[in-house]
Length: 125
Ligand SMILES: [Zn+2]
Image (cartoon, rainbow, N blue to C red; front, side, top):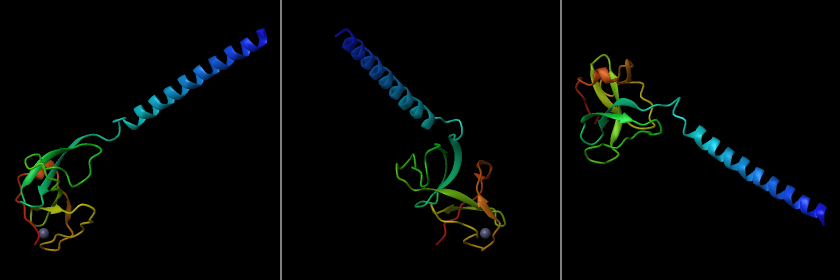
């Protein structure tokens, strides 16, 4: 009987250790997935695809375009692109590659940066 009791105690200790280990692993993985060390929030220049209005917003690390317009609460903010030849900004539809300006067809285009926020915006037809 004495041996049986010892084994029971060992089994209970083993179960407690396993529970603690699993709990630790779950917490560790949660911390890792929430780690903001690589991706950060950043200011981006966007254009509301309905109104053509330029809007500077903070894009959170996990957010994808289209972003929510803080004024209208609608998901209408597209990433702003710049045509360097014409010095104007236009909205880039989400999940569409833009290699040419929709107005002058120049390939001198790229993602607009916050320093471009004073440029005029133009909406494609
Ligand atoms: Zn252009």
